[in-house]
Image 1 (cartoon, one colour):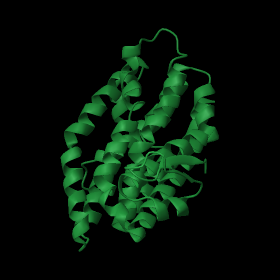
Image 2: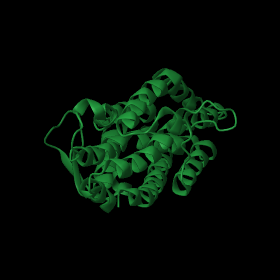
Image 3: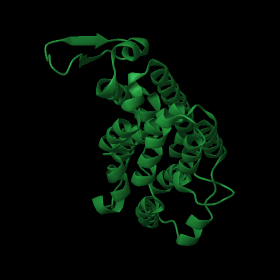
Amino acid sequence: MPRLSYYSGMTDANNLTSVTNSDQAIQEFVGGQFIVWLVDYIIHEVGRWPVMAKIENAKAEGQKLRKFLTQLFLVQQAMWSEKDSEPGFLKFALANLSESSDPAAEPAVAVLESRFSVKSGDELRVLWVSLFQVLGLTAEELMRLEPKEATRNYIAELSELYSSSEWPTGLGALVCYWTLIGPKFKAIRQLCCKLENYSVKDFEIINSLAVYETQGLTLAHELLEKLSFDHENKYLIWDGVQRHLSLEQEFLNHTVKYLD
């Protein structure tokens, strides 16, 4: 893990502590300090993955990009799925929280219900559909899209993580999901910039998702800050982050082949 430095106290700006490993961060940081460290860790870690450089440096071809992006689109749609037979990640996370007898889980339910809605998913879908039309995918073809094996496995593993883990672990994974969207789509934006005969407007969804770090940090504060005063909860949150990062890297390592 990279060396990150943070102020160890809100009242003493000169008291600077260097944190070099997760155990030290979990021991020393609480509240907002822990959240900032956690979000920065996720962003730094994703930026170190070799697959990010592969995405940025891939040859820009519309058909290959379309194949790659359709799998990312299907994953994002899995967040909001309203099908009873295929509940989305949010439903799994909310069910996990609702089943907990811990009163500390109740505020997280309120946050998820207020911040996310079917409308949010629909708004993103409209932008995705617009992009795929530009890339030559018809509405009928979009409706028939099927996840590839790596995508199916990724969705299944995330569903299990959100539904069956300890609820702080699920929240840590959910925060990780939203935090890494920014750096991931920044790399994709670099690739898209090399395509000829396309306008910035054509890639509105990519540009929107590339600046999601702020949303990830805000969500992390809302969901995790109160939990981060308890050591056990911090370790559970950290477990969710690590598990999600592992699943995400594996998924991208398989999916990047569509850009070859």
